[in-house]
Image 1 (cartoon, one colour):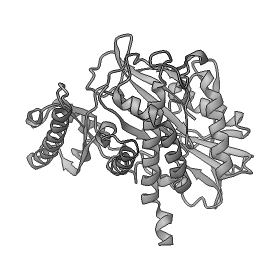
Image 2: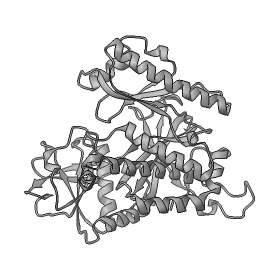
Image 3: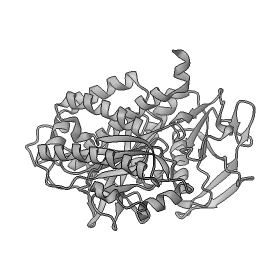
Image 4: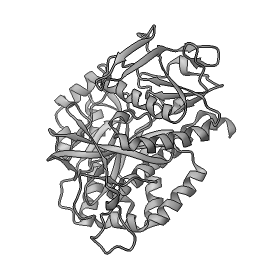
Length: 431
């Protein structure tokens, strides 16, 4: 179900991780029952932060890229999961069309698309890549850094179907989070499966809705294994739309920042944690262009035009109004060669298929690592002789720390399934 992987955190496992490992049978049964009631997103990646005293997801992507950062030994798991996912959706599937983002010159991103092509080809499908970019007017072959290449073809839209020349897919896989909006060419495809659905894109999706769903999942899971849900859940406040260029907007933001910091301080005091609490301020939807900012004290918001906000406004096309979420910051205890790191878990259907570390040498343990200068270090499988064995005395068998990361990843994926059910426009038609 979840591979045993080497992690950067090699110290003794804490009480939370031990509780999860001890509860493995109950946890797996709980997940099985949940997946009988809910449909997992087609594929997901989850950014996780391990503070030692707390382990929580801080971001969940429903259009994950970075698949090329998974190691070759992880591919069989991904292929098996792809087979299961496709069989569930379209058992007679033969042709799959991947629709990527409009980043024809970004070979790093296109290496990710090539990896997806490889996974689904190995799963037994004919795979082509159809671009909706207006710049791709003919078949375009692009060389990739690893010596591979990728063939982008302009999509062809008929009345109710999407394809490329001489290729009619039954399933279309979107690897495009629709940050620029939903293009009309993807709408009203009633005869084909579109994965993920359009309402998983940022025009509809909100981080606050996802973490509200996650909070519900964390409470139920905490009750199942007997732990405080806070140990796996980052608290947050949704600010709504705030105009950062106005005193009223900044006061509104300051009120929410102060409220979340106060809640975190209380929890730190309860658990005897001698760290300085912080929050992360970010756009509620992923296409606002607002930079992520770490705030340790509400006084940091006093400057009427701090540089960080100015940069954020430029990123949003000059607008200073954003839908904002204030989220409890989670420290990271992970290190790769002394550089701060965080694990990113990749899932397809309901299965964990692998992951990697996002590493940034220029960032602190309380800062966002998804920034220019970050590097990606593949997680490696542990040798089979290091798998934890039932009945072994403590310390004689290495614990599967990645099992814990896989559990948190699946909790976030389950929250995403709740989220997608709540925002499904077709579900409203059945009420």
